[in-house]
Each structure stands twice: as structure tokens, then as C-alpha cells.
Length: 274
Image (cartoon, rainbow, N blue to C red; front, side):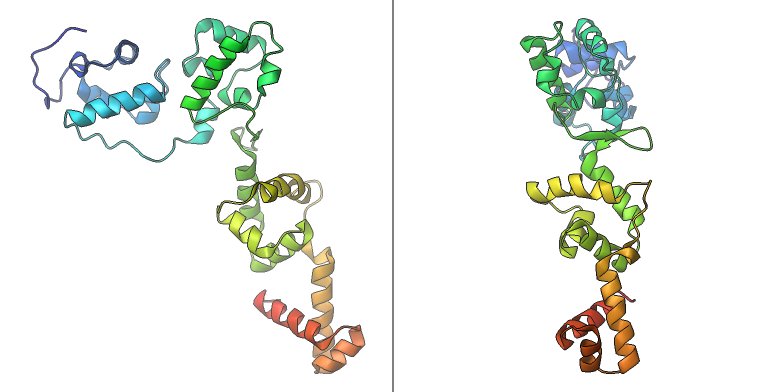
């Protein structure tokens, strides 16, 4: 790259003066980004989408601009996972030959690639250990890896399975009673369900439980109705018996429960506003 007499700080400074690595420089030039001003005006997502311009090139570009005093407000939040997973594999830095190999394996999108296991890819004669290493390197630059637990959502986007379950539960569990009885039906503690809905970290055991149990309860073919489950029926029986007898002890005798159990159920009903 040739030098230029333009002084740093000038908006139309040519990108040659940034002394970028050859690959990053060629990517920007081929995209028509010839000056610092044009780079700064381009959304970060569009630059990351440039072919062969990965996260490593982005870090170098950001560091150079920062050292030269340019105030480029780069979004520090993680990139939109769904947008990355929906990208064509030809956009993320693979060679044309490797893209053709992945197409032969019926892989078109990044999300499809991230769900594959390494051993499955190695079954294709065109993809050996060396190309598998390249695939992993590129995915890692995007914050991904092979063997991820992803599903295709209703919106046609690849998303993490747990994130999809969380969003579905948030949409369906509208009240405290919904949450409590759903947790009961799933064999979960109510507090654990609330932590999950809040996005808190969970143990591997609990994450696996959500993946295996919760989807069955969310089956659209059989909508979840917590009023059919035993905990709800038991609570309503206790409430009805207490209203009829006006006494914890008489209600307990009528139902064959301890009066302490009746008291706990009534308190729960009040908390859940039933």
C-alpha cells in the first residue's frame, strides 16, 4: 500500500494510510470503501458481512482507528446471533473450494454448519482434518463452534434451543399461576423456572432438563392446561372445603389432610391470586 500526504484526522484520509494487513485492505477496497470517512459511515454489521473480513480483521481495524484518534462508536454488544447463523457460508471467509465442499454436504447457511458434529463432516471425503480445522477456526471467530444445539425457529431463523424455549415460555406463561403450575408439571422448582425466564445461568443438569422435558409440555398439538394437573385440583379442593366449613381443622378432616397442609395451600392460592 502506498503512502499519502493527507494528515491523520482528515475525514477523507485514504485507507492506505491505515497500514492494514493486506487481506483487510483488499476487502475494504473491493467493497468501495476508499476513505476513513466511508468506513466510519458503514454499519459494523455490513463490514463484518464482507467476504474474508472476519472478527480478527475487525479488531485490527478498530484498534488502528482508535490509535489515530477517530471516534468510531463500535457496538460492544455481541453481534446478533440469529443474523450470523442465517448468513450464507460463502460470506464468512471460506475459500471457494471449501464452500463447494460444504455445498456437497448440503450445508448452505452458517446455522446448518454449526449444528453439525465434527465426526459427521469427516465422513465426506472432500473434508479432511485440515479443512475441518479451518472450519472450526472461522466459526470460533464468529463466536460459534461445531455441534451447537440450534433449532430453526418459527420465524425461519437459526437460534439456540434454550433461547427458543425461554422466549416461548415467556410468551405463554402470562401469570404467576401459569409459571407455578407449569413448573410443577415439568418437575421443576418454581424458583428455578423464574431464574431460567430471567436469563440467569443454570447448571448443565438443569439445562438438559429444560431441553428434554419442557418441549413436550409446549407441544402445539396438545396445549398445556395447568387446571388439569393434580397440584391445581388439590389447591382448589382445599379452598372449596375451607370456604364451605370456615375452619382449617374441619376442612382438613373433610379432605383427609393436615390442617397445616390446608393452610399452606390457601396461602399459595392467595399468592397466585386464585
